[in-house]
Image (cartoon, rainbow, N blue to C red; front, side, top):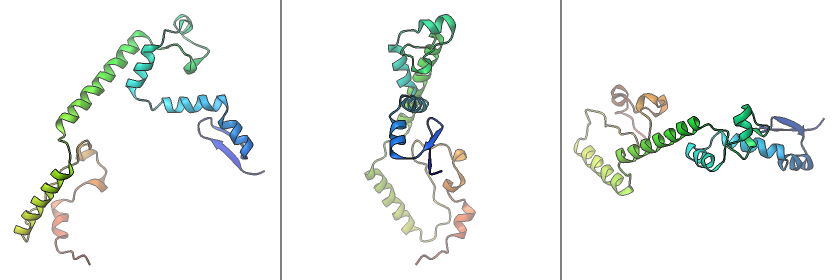
Length: 167
């Protein structure tokens, strides 16, 4: 029967050859499905900006349905939905601003200085009695939300690894 091509966007399958694939990928239905897929992952601020430029769809307001669906050039959002979207965008902006204020800017120079200080402390204390303190990079989720592979070693694990020799 030959190889078949399955389009992930359209959930369609057809015989895989150059002509059929090119015809499908350039088709209107595929373009619509692909756009709908990527629209699911758009930023809320982009959606808000686009919806504010559109006029309301009269057909959608009158009957609650539109024959064009998501491909309609008019807006299908009510005033309440637009207000909720505005509030969501503003909340996201505030959260980003707070995160940028909390996290100091990471520069190579500051990292190198901190590393040199740690090396000096480590050389002064030949045998470290307590494990080093770990600081998560800015923007990372809290330690409880990280997968186990990204957790820093515990004090018991640190004590076990003191006698390791590499090389």
